[in-house]
Image 1: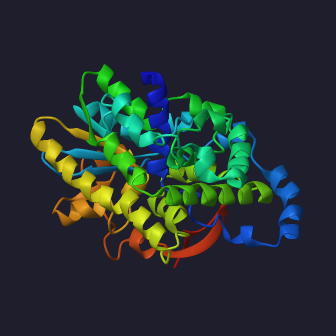
Image 2 (image 1 turned 135 degrees about the vertical axis):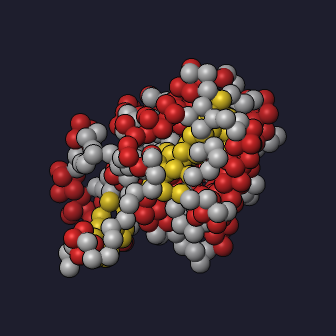
Length: 380
């Protein structure tokens, strides 16, 4: 396999592992469970209200980057990424660009220069005479081939690939051509850092990432495909926006809580397989990456570090932010230039700003195919 094709395959891996279960193995949204007649009646209306590609590429509000500062020695900047090449995502807000300019070392999830096709192929391809045709069965094969042809890749061209590789491709369904032609955000950051002769590296190896899915049984990998097909077909039938487009919109708004809610709110924690996979995709990797980024500081103690990993790895009790705080580090969000100098000042008790502080509540709204909880504010 050529280096170019391997980079393309890793692009799929980044999206699947980083976006992690965006559309599977969970239900799509509350209203997708409506009666079929009702969904069909609503479909034309939803299709009419759908954004044009030009409208979809315009952010509804100024970017609020997912950037944090770790008060370590040397300093670490943490940047939450989304593993796609949407032009809006690749356009860094000023505060992110300044953090990049100050940094002498950059680490992404994996070192993009350490991908050996010969070592990876056994993890990606079915052994012996096995093919997807024999693993999936005739009915699922036909159903999956129809979807893959819609995505521009007949299934027969990937007949020797393990089911989880097909799952990676399905995760990207709904991306516009322009969003797939550009290098993914992580790749672009890595490439720019190399051009500037910065220290570059990864917090994981690609083998470690692949092992998360390669260690699943073929039946479990097939389950991922079935769940993803169910979700995509439900979204299409209801006229809803592709799941990944809804996630991009949330990412651009910079609300980490809403992003985590969108990705995790419908995860079925009563299902042992789902629990196992979510632990491997998020919790276990978060612990590993938090430990390794601290180890990297010792290798280059004179350089500010910039760490760019998927946004889903930062939030929650087992997220990287909380894990670093448990290690004794002070971590704060940086959305403005002045935040790079120190933590944002909090309003004092009794001040006009505190008297007018909003009360944070929650409401449920539709975001693409998701039905999620988002914060809402009412003044005192």
